[in-house]
Length: 168
Image (cartoon, rainbow, N blue to C red; front, side):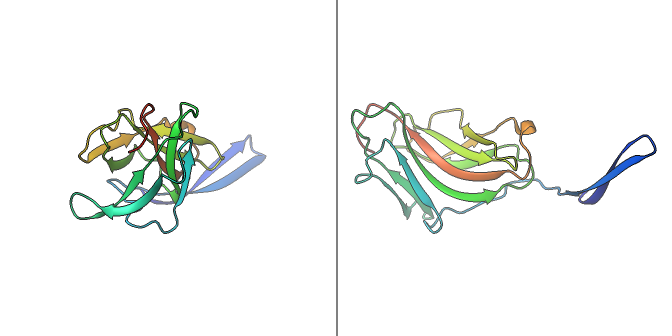
């Protein structure tokens, strides 16, 4: 049940303390951001050519606006190529998973989410399958949330790009 509750701890009859806890209850999907605008987003590139890469808003297959990641890899760079957009959103409670709809240029890319808890512990959650289809697919990532201290914040959404090509 949602509300405010007191949790009382005591040691013998002499030491006693109370902490107040706010309880929130919810279910279903909560949209954090429609990703229809670049307002407030910071683009971060890792081993990706800044002149030939970027994130823009384009019309998706269903006519809605979506973010598009265009890239050109830096030849001879380390084998890890990433692009991500950063903005902070507090997640409601302790979510079962984080979800995004994505499609690819046909190469084996991986979508990831960076989350951070109240203690400053930062975790990268990878979608457990490649994004390699040219139609939109629903992608889900989950974590062992039991080790994280709420509130939990989503810090970024990104793509680990498949190595071996030049651009997409």
